[in-house]
Image (tube, rainbow, N blue to C red; front, side, top):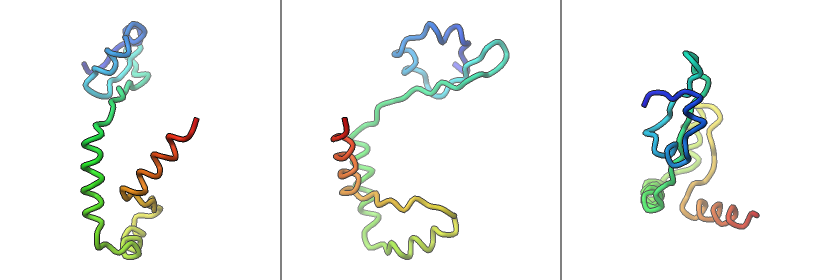
Length: 97
């Protein structure tokens, strides 16, 4: 499905929206008035594997040298995305009401 019209959108269930293959244009007549992007739950096992791989790739790297190399790209996110840092961030968010 390349697009849906605005009237069809009013009739769609959450399940049907989540079943969309990807971003879908919302049209009113011939005009595109929006973009519907279904949200999918992340696979925790896949995320854990990616974090483990990133941690392995980061071993032996020099953060200061990385900062110098990345400076050519402008303002780069300096966040530490190690497994421990991600777990701490998750724990912090889980505490919030």
